[in-house]
Length: 111
Image 1 (tube, one colour):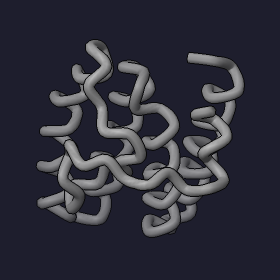
Image 2 (cartoon, helix red, strand yellow):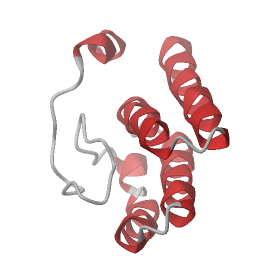
Image 3 (cartoon, helix red, strand yellow):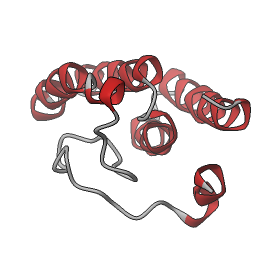
Image 4 (cartoon, helix red, strand yellow):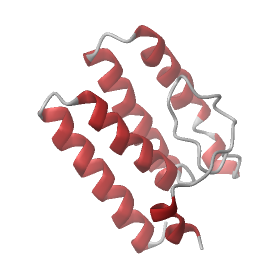
């Protein structure tokens, strides 16, 4: 993972952790979704991100999201073989193989 991309991923994860500690779970998920877009091509960052989404789902007692994140942790193996849908935000309510538009401010990391 290139350092510029890794730094952007780590920044979103840091912001997500801050929101998690503040019990601001909607904003935590927003940063986790952005981090997912940035880190889904790397197995370790991909699994780490879904683990955090799972943690938030458990904390908010969202069973659907928690179960969806368990499935996505397993499916993260796709990162190892290059099978990931670009731009997908990683939430359980989103089809796990659906490509999505990358937010404009994150596109720079994929050029």
